[in-house]
Length: 431
Image 1 (cartoon, rainbow, N blue to C red):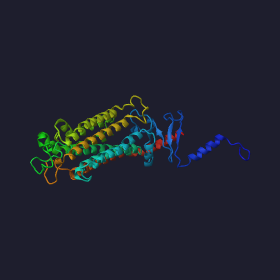
Image 2: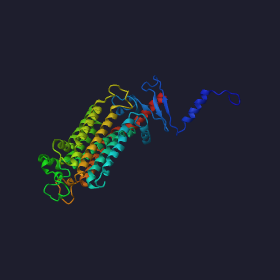
Image 3: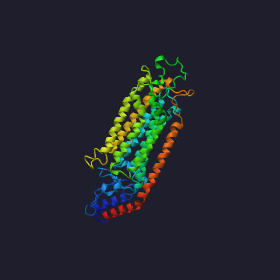
Image 4: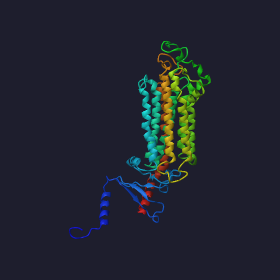
């Protein structure tokens, strides 16, 4: 009852309070909009997040077919988000939220295990040429994880941006394979850290007879030409082929795109892992009684685990399990691409442990390090042979991405305004 004796309707008062609160731009609240099936048959209740304006999460029937994924029915963002909207969507339950976090959080986990190397006893300073290949490996992994997470977060800005995001994603995967190859070449190469026999200069008083350097005869001569001349160039060429193939699957061979993208990265794995395969099939370069031999014995187990997680990730990526069994049930959490991300990171983590095992083995065997004053059979890492290779590769990949991005803009650019108008008309009709 008011002072003048009139009765205030509680429902009207509550409605007025809600309307006033809703008008405040800084208030973030969740609403549910129920749309009549007779007025707009394709829509179901849609969740809005008010951050200055409503941002609906849509079903697969409400977004362009280009945006949809197999067996994922809901949780889509319409491709007209601003940069701020995309960033805020990382904290919303969309069908891309898990894809973002499963590659963004691993960046910090990887960095934690990576920096352990520089705290080892006897390890050179972080800027020593000995660590050039390791830093290139870090760059490859960091770019892969960041590009993947950002691609899933920012791809709803437009159809063109979506294409560019995943072009960059494919490019960083290829660059990562070359970063791995550089680390394998200098740390797991059949002659990694071993000087040319007969160059002299070893001090017998520093190293016992049982810990002296092995002669180079342990390396199969037939493989020497490939390892020393063609290994890194072939890794780069294969990486470029992979980028071209994966970018093409966004326009061609759409029906088999996941199979092609998975199989196309099998080739760089086989090429880059050649030194590891060789080491597994031959005897260790380290004397059996040395601490280096003990440190190196864990390398095979890490490599087998690395391969296992790659196989499991490939199965998830191709099979689309578990959402294939229950379409719509795993739209937000637990769908195959999230498991694919988890497995790929676990494979990278085991690869890092494998490389660290070989690094420790070399550092524990000072006689196997390459002295600067001698002429080794395998030249030590230089800026040109590590950072220079990665820079040249990244420049080539960037050129490929620019070309495909220009093609994507010519296809989807003209559709951008028309798509926005149709989306606006559809919502106005429903209201």
